[in-house]
View 1 (spheres, helix red, strand yellow):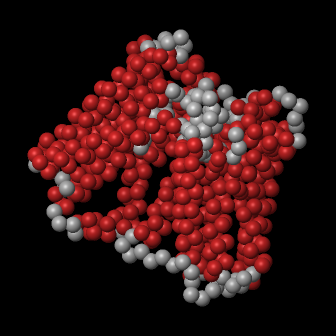
View 2 (tube, helix red, strand yellow; view 1 turned 180 degrees about the horizontal axis):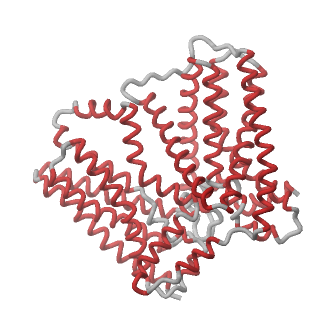
View 3 (spheres, rainbow, N blue to C red; view 1 turned 90 degrees about the vertical axis):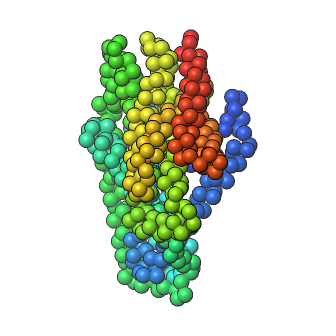
Length: 520
């Protein structure tokens, strides 16, 4: 029965999530576009190699200091990554999967059904956590003296880490269905792990690509694996296995409690509240609806909020690691660059927000609620404006914060700072209009997992491409203005003019596409 349930799940969902994440570019008849498919697989392969290379170099540097340090590092990193991957999919697999309602009506024992869902979750997390184990095995093979027992323990560890993580987050998921506090803690945990992962990546990249980079591929002398290390490793694995088993029984008990309470009805309550708005607050009610949808899934909120704060996080980490200071010294050594450094940094900030998918997946994120929303007594202009205002409300404070920080850091003239702040409003509005025009044209509302609405949505890629063209046009015109006109005020008015043109064109297109979607 377990095998049949797992096979049915993957048959209905099209395979592993890792494979689903790159299954983009399907035409109306369901056939893949070969070009997009090849690029997706190549991109995944390249990023996986880059990621494993970073992990490998980090492990080698730790083996130089201590095998114990490297051992603790793999446990910490492995658990962190497996819990992070579990966080993004645990609710969909265990409690909110569309196939669960059907399965619960069948004569299937609750214990068997729960175990099958955990097995699915375990397979997903195991595949992803292998990306940590493989670099560690290679690092040990090249830099430690051979020990068959040590490598057997590594293999056992590869199975135990996702085992513990799956049941640990299973308990978290079931508790979050019964407690709003636990639900918020889980959301905070997602953000914390996401930021720590970025910190880790930037730290390793800083060591490898910074001005004082020193990469060690293989140690000169191989490290010995002592009996103390083997005992420590065995105890860690045993503890994780026993703890995971205990968490499994707790999860079974909690799953029964959740099933008896007839699941969650929060979405229904929120839905009934949102449609009881007054006529004078239609836009506000629609914006609140956008907020509810965005935070209805950790996949939505994590992806989109990290896009907003990522520039700040990267700047802070680079500053703490000293990379920012070294980079600024190298850049400032270029003759005449001091006159343009703040313009370059402002351009980089704008580039970060060019790739924001808040609006370009806004309609798609509604999913099954989209058909229901078409019945609401609201015209298409109010719907588009609400999504536009929501995007601007979240994004403009963030981008303005970075612009002001750059102005203070580089001592940019006040008038130039004001002009760029003014331009950022139109730039964000243009980005939002482009995204809405594309997403309303062909919304991807038929998805099984929330990740599909964002990560597997070609609308986001299309909007990125058009917005990148917008940024290139702005940058090119600014450079030409600096070369030929040589009036800085004129140069900084250009972003506003270009963004206004893009906004006018694509906002009209968004209204037209929205009207088609909401016309029966």
